[in-house]
Structure formats: C-alpha cells, structure tokens
Length: 416
Image (cartoon, rainbow, N blue to C red; front, side, top):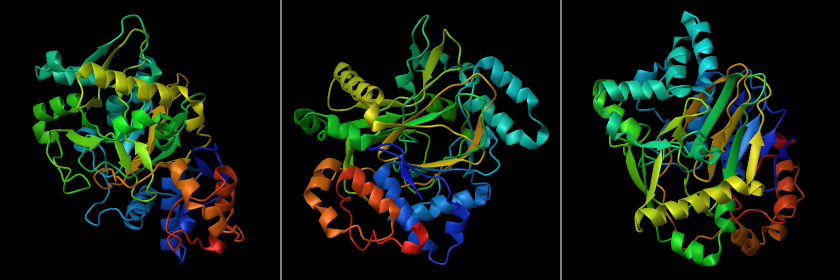
C-alpha cells in the first residue's frame, strides 16, 4: 500500500520493509522502479525501518543510482570533512537537526564514549556557528568569511532551503536520511518540488532562466579546507570529477532530469548556518550566484525563486518523523528541502548520498505538466494492473509520466 503525501510531491509506503525489497529475488527491478518513483514524486517516505542497518542503507542508495542510469564510475558521496567530523564510516554522515545552543550543549554532554561520532558531528552540524568561527579565527580567516547579519532578528526560514552538495561538479542524485533519535516535538522536514517551481514561472521568465548558469560555492568550507588541508578529503568524493578543495561548480539554472525528462529549476537555495539564538549572525554555507547578470539582478531572481518555493505551499510536502528508523529518500536533482528547529530533546540520524551526473539542460525537454499532457499515457497505460502506485499517480495527474514503457513495468507481486 502507498498514498500520495500531496498532489504535487511526496509518496509514503507505511507498511513496506525495505530490507525485504533489497533481498527479494527480483530486487533489481524493485529498486529500479523505486528510483523512477523517487524521480517522479521527488521524495518517498518509509516508516520504522528497524532492520535497515547502515550497510544496507548504503547498499540501497548505491543500487538506486546504478539501476537508474547514474554514471558507472560514480558511487556514494564522501564529505570532504568526514575525517574532521569524526564519521566512523566516511560514506555515512552523522546528522543532527538545528537545536538551541543550550540543548545542544546538554546533548553533547549526555553522550557516552560509544557515540563519539555523533558527539563530534553534533558540534559541527547542530550548533556549529561558534565552532566554525573558532576554526576560522585561528586560521586568520574571520574577516573573509561570508556573513549574513540581520540585527535583532532570527534568520528568515527561507534561508534554510537548499539542495545537497551542489558545489560539486557531480552533485548527489538521491539523498537519504534515516532517523535514530527524535525530539519530543518539532523537527519536521519540508521538501519543495523544483518541477513545480519551474511550472509556476511565466513563459518569459522560463526563457530567461533557461539561458542562465549559476556558480554554487561553499566559501566557509573552502576557507576551512585551505586552513586544515591535512584533515580534508580531497577526493574523489563519489565521482572522479569531485576532487580538490575549491568547493565550487557552475551548473545550469534550469536542468533536465535524466530519468523523467522533465525540466526543473536547479538548487536555487542558500543554506545559512546558525546556532539557534534569537539575535544571530549566520554564516553562508552554500552560496548561489547567477553568472550572466549583475549581482543585484542575480539576487532579485534568486529571491523571487525562493519566494515561490517557500510561499507556494502546493509544491511542498511536510514530513513528521514519528518513530526511530523512519527514512526519507529524495531526488536531489528536483527538490529543495529545509529542516525545522526544535527545543525539546535532540534529533539524530544517518545520512547517505549517491552521486549522479553533471547537471545539463536538454533543449528538447519539457516541463512536467507539458510532458504529461502531450504523452497521453493514461490511454496507453490502461490502469488494469494491480500496481497501486500507478493507479494513484494517474488519479492525481490524470495521466502517467513520460518514461519508457519497458522501463516502467512494475512487478505486480511486489506492489500488492
């Protein structure tokens, strides 16, 4: 069984055990179909995956890429600071969502020696503003760090929306987050569809954006990498193209998804790191600058895109983590996401990312809405199989997505 989280984005499989899928005789077909579903719906959710270990999560993410056409030489992503963060496995990142400074300090003190990786990672990932400033100060970099300061105000929530690792030449294709500990309240995660964002633009705006590129960079991480060169993993980070410490890449502002063939606005978000204080100064972790226009015009365009993404709720989905071992898997090529802070308890999880292709725009590609309208796949795929997912997709979109018929054959036994 499955159900759509919203008409535009998200699907949940509340009773599926991913380990059963991984170990099924027809596992390749199941995982391939899952990759297609994620590409179409943006993000999928699975509840209480208690049998899913770190190694199995890695296996799942690796096969999602391999079976859906990602470059053969690519694998799982390794963060350039995995050694500095103290990650036990460089391909699994310890995750901690934003919390208040006091809660973070309590959380760190409460850890025992067997949780060394989480303890060190929390210092970087949760309330790391002071840590990054400290490293930068010791390295003489403070004055060069990009700072966003809004005196007397908490950072706007739209500044938290981002896609993963877009500073790499080959960014992630699929990202996953499996929770281990949850706060008593709060800590939800939101995703927004970049397909939906593109569809909301007027035609002149689409025409403009399709001819623009953007430079994605991580200036703070680059500064720290140069100062702590011996502790930085220079690559390859999941791809032969992801090497060095420049932490910068140029990508098209509009890209074509290699699985669906649909257009989307690629990763317009800027991630601002803060420590949860009311009056805070945020370090710009992810900087996006449009290349072919002036700085002011670039900011105006990006602000408008982020306004649509964050204010138009019909292209968003909000996921409430209900139990340990809930997992979300999303398509990093066609979504942006944001974490919500909390003040009650702590939130920990494991993150594994696959690495995909370098973004590109196919001039022959279309938007999702145009492709669905033109393909008329509803008549071609008469909904007479027992694939519940296909049925629900057709109810929502009034047609099926424009993908190869052979590629989308789903084993009936799997989805019943």
